[in-house]
Each structure stands twice: as structure tokens, then as C-alpha cells.
Length: 359
Image 1: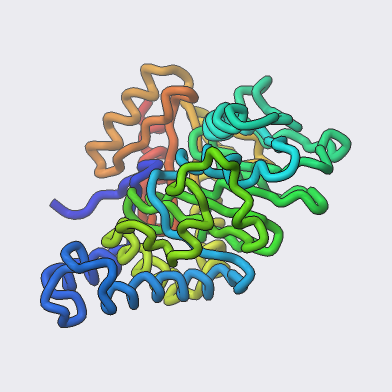
Image 2: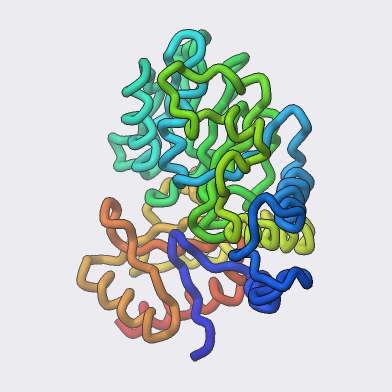
């Protein structure tokens, strides 16, 4: 069977060239006589892999030396606890913007360790937009300010980063890291699960400003302390070694593609193809306010649930899979991360036109 177009929200497609390179090196990485999955993470050859991954990531994201780059485990969900445990250092209070499912989980976890001030929410419209932010509601004494830059489930994205003054911004970039250019210096901490734009599930990235290290609450477990991992180059314990290797290959692919800025242009074009069709369609409609539409996760519905189900079933027959929307939103969702080729998006748009004409 030929490869199909996988629109899953994650784990998602990986670049073909990355998969082929991993396949080529599977049994004998770089003449080491073994697979990356078999080698000691303390060996020189693996040290070159993890250091190389960090080096390329710093290059493509323009990460300065006053930030630590950490390869962790536990998924982005573990960060919902690690962030307050490490950053509730002064007043044990933080500002959060509630933009949907992942923000809700982050807020719930942060409340276990301190005070959460929800400065804005779009709950009243089922999270179909990024709420307007009123700076008068920001707490200037907050330890940090948390946003989810792209909302995988709801299909929204921040198009502008808020100005929070001296309060460090914490950004959950799990579903749009490396898809558009961000000025890292605007953030105190960026974290992301790898399984959408960076690599396989099992690796979690954290990019943290060094002055925020070493302030963890006394109750913080050793493994949940960012300083533990910063001090040991992400190898305090055995890291997700093979996953980091794949991430390195993906980072190199991003660089070969022309960097994040080049991919952003491609992503904008891919999204435009689908949004333009949704705006003209009489059967389908996008669920998100236009100004806040995600480049990565495009959510849409038809006239009724029966038609949705028929569309999803016929899409599978056309080798377009994982288009069912999240249960909290319903309808359909096309996740078009970096590795989704433009051809796949065009095929989906053409199928949608055909389906509309026939139904």
C-alpha cells in the first residue's frame, strides 16, 4: 500500500526523508555497529546526537545562550505541573488565558500549587476565538503569564504575543512549534510535545530562560525540577534517546527546507487552500473566527452529524485519514503540520468539493 495522507492531530506525519534516513541507519548508526536504540546515552556517539539536536534547534529557532534547551519526557501534560512547581517562586500566583481544553488542564494543575488568575476566556463561545486581552486585568506581580499559542482541539491560534512587561510569558507551543517564526526572547519558557512538528511521541522540549532556573518549590520532585535537567544536559537519567535522534533529523530537515520562515510561508499557503474552500462552500463551514484561525489545525463541520460521519468514512476510502474532529468539538479537523505536503491538502480540498457536489 502507498503512503496515505494522515491528518491526525498527533502523532502526525514525519518528513519522508527523515524516515528514510532513520531506516538507512536503523541497524548501524554512523558505522557504530548498532542502532541508536541500543547504544548507551553516555557514549560519545550519542553525546554527538543530543548535542547536535540542540545545536540545530538553537540555529533554526534563534535561541540565544541565555536559554537552556531541555529534552524531557512526560509529554506537554507533565509541563502543566512542572511550570508552577518551578516558577511559583515569588508570589505563587500566575495569569492564564483560557483558550480551551489544554489551557483548562494547565489551569487545573497550576491551582494545586498556587493562585491562578484567568485574565480572559472564550468559553462563552465554545472557544472558537482567542479572547481579547485587557492589560488592566494582568497581575504585574504574577510569577508568570501562560498562553497556549495554538489550540489543537479548537483550531485557534494567537496571532500576536501579549505584552506582559516584566512578567515572563510561558507558552505551550505543542501544536505549532517550528511552524511559524517566534521571537524566543519574548518568552520566559516555551514547551512542546514532539509528536506534531518535531518528532515521535515521547520527547518533550522545554526552552527556559536561565534566570528562571533554580527557583523551584521545595516540594518539587527531582525529576520535575528544570535545573536538574539543565545541569546534566538533559541526561540526568536515560533520555528518550531514539526520539531525540529523530528530532535531530527533523530539525535538520527544517533547516534544509529554508528554516522556519520558509515553512511558515508553505503553511500559510496550505491553510489558505482549505480556508478559501470553506469560505465558499455551501455544505461545510469553518468553526473558528477568521482572525484567529490556526495554520495547523483546521476545524469544520457540515450540515449535520450524519453527513459528517459519511464524509469521514468516504475520506478514508480516498486515503485521507484521521479527519474526525475531537469529541469536544465534533465535526472534522484537518491537522496540516509541517510534514503534510501541499499535495495532501490539495487532495483533501478536491475531495471536499467532490463530496459536496455529490451530496
